[in-house]
Length: 121
Length: 383
Ligand SMILES: [Zn+2]
Image (cartoon, rainbow over all chains, first blue to last red; front, side, top):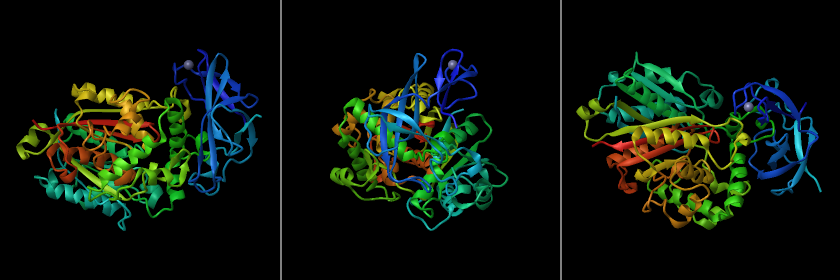
């Protein structure tokens, strides 16, 4: 499992990637690995009414990364319930972010591993 | 070709025993019975519905309804645009008349949800998200929490301004006999209710609801022959925003609201100052602010002041959600956009009873996903 942002030849970066760059319509040709980078929390929430197979509470954050002269955001679970806007976080790999077997989606239809954000002291 | 709405109806919203088929038939029957036409005048039938397959294993509901209401051989189609399926149905119905493809079009929107547990219903709705969002357990309420925190922190808005949206819409719902809740609440109740997605609490969210609503469309010429009480669809627009919510340049701007309302204003030759009443998609209280700003009624970061000052109350400068909104009336996904249209129609033809405000121009903004798809409709009272 990678944590890759995608970049087109005009320097637009998105996470996740798309068939065509949403900004300019060109193909995305490069990847930028976010897993070794630190980002900053833009906003966060403690979600308590969670669907089947999801931890409760589920603390989520939108995190902004500085990459190649621009910024890219990612949304993900936070390792702790103790997080604030502006916190610096680092990605931590998790094998299963939720139980794929008891939600509405076909388990084989997508990946279930990924990265949580851990605040850096 | 000018498009008119000549009849509108809705079922009681709430926890209903009826399944989707019967909810759709109930709204459709009432609309047709009250209309000055024969059932076989209907040439097109649109059924707005997000997830009948996922909620109850029933598919093909448009054909069921065409047969059940005696509309054969009318053209029939199910319209899914998630939470904005109802608005998308208005768009399809408008297109069918405006293009000349149909001279009489019935739109019925509905959803049956309450037989599922709240986590199950939340999961069905969350399945609209991108797989990279879904695997993190993201829900629509959690998008609302993330956005509300950002809005409050960035614009220094008081938490109370969101609670006041809930209080207002509950107060409006008291006078709507079809609303799921007809009960006033206080700001304190809203502010002390359990946390659902911090900083938002239970009363910042609409309930899970069963219900259906219907509208009947024809040409302006035919409408004028048939009735004195009709409304005209003078502007409509539909647009999309990013599927992945965190990819938006500004988390507090709903691009689909901006774009669809721009289209609707341009078609109608009107602007935000011309509005007399509006139904906004208050699935979460914060969405009322984002839409007030998106449709140009308030500047970015300032809609919360309208809430604090009472400008959006029923007796305020621009009454918002006189029906009670999704918050108090309920949110049966596919029905909600149609029910917004029903309220605007009733306001424009003077049938809103105790909820009546002085209105010649009304707007409905129906939001799918977390602003992923949006339909804005402007209706005017007949001359
Ligand atoms: Zn590009």
